Length: 157
Image 1 (tube, one colour):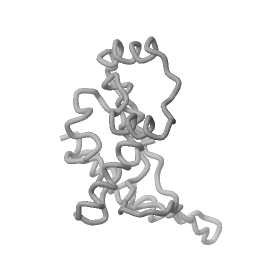
Image 2 (image 1 turned 135 degrees about the vertical axis):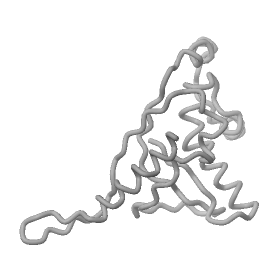
Image 3 (image 1 turned 45 degrees about the vertical axis):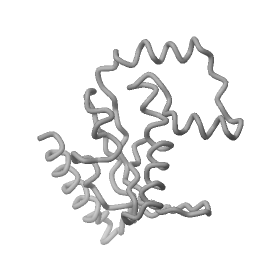
């Protein structure tokens, strides 16, 4: 699942929080496959806490040898997450209607994974579906998908 993180504002603490989120939510999963190594930022933090995975040198070598052989990656794109530095765990089921995170300039992909073809799937919009006179009225979902497809077109260009 692809959940790019953006700072809620551009102060240093929040920018670092967004980078932290991207390291764990994106780079931890995509770096081993596309770069052949786990992100050093995350590996260092795991080691400091005694949580380093029990991987073997043979497994790590397999990642290194095969990273350049990937010719595409599939992204199960859902929504961006907006973060700020916080000392408490928070969670929200609120779904974003923002669809602009796949355009060039995305902090999670520009400069990191541009050499590989991306196939993007869309989960749609998690929203309430009012039923009026026996029909599902999902205008917000339709508008979201329309906007999302416009953004995808811009990203391809």
